[in-house]
Picture 1 (spheres, rainbow, N blue to C red):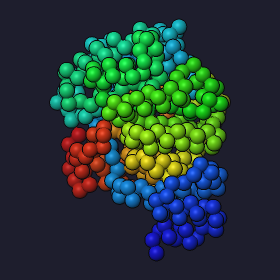
Picture 2: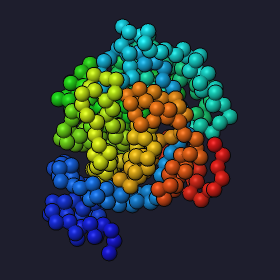
Picture 3: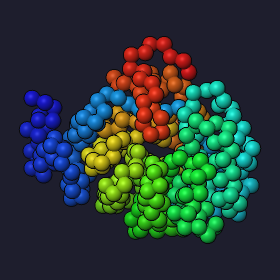
Picture 4: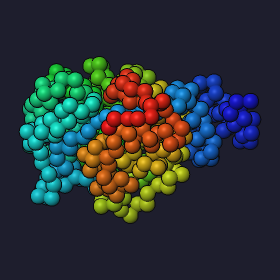
Length: 381
């Protein structure tokens, strides 16, 4: 008897048994069934179902890429309660602002190295406008045409477009023409206004985030999707958020991956809110894998979870643990994440994956396979 059949046969709760049967048959679960998983599904139960889906889709493959981050500034016009990273424009002496030449120097520092992606995100700085970022993208693209440029959260884009008096369609087209190739998933937080209006009242709405990503998809660009969990949201808000992503994915098929992001409570205005336990983290990953049936990939961002917890997530539906990062992101380290110096060599990342009996696959941004390291013994960093 297969593991999934054992799960079905031994499950005493009929509602959970029916969900397991749906998973076996590849049938989409409903919002009510997702709520049942959050309320009644044990860690072992949801983990087993998520792993079944993960292995049905990807076997033992675990994806990563060779990337680096550029964070142009942490100066921001917004003041999200959960953020430990940004410094309000009024207090910008506490922050940093990189020039285009400084950012281009970061790109040039990777010349001759097998990096495939640059990831550009930061605060919303009033002086860093559309023209500024178009020039940056053009110069990066001219210097290294083969480097995939993934950049700007919907929050940054919404501000850019409004300041430039451009529609979303016009703004996205201009950035694409300059060389922007895909969008990260940041800024999604929680879509539901009951929560969003408390934790991030002045940034782009959930509907605005979805519109920007849909527009990018319609232009042939792929994007990622995130959800900030483990703070003041309830299960219903998580499900509402994932339903809206699932509906857009049905419509456009433009999302590469879903990335749950754990709320960290250090150095922000929500420090009184306790963080979720590792058990709840893994349950969230597993339930997301079960619910988001039209997302090919589920990513655990290892600098946020920590290396060992990222390994653990590979048994709960996750098939991607991001990239080498190269000590260039401060967003989570400033919030008290497990990784205060988030960098791993390619060899370390491959070893991390192999330690839990998974097969390391280097991918590009769009999940095309670059190298299969499953059977390699000696690696070059």
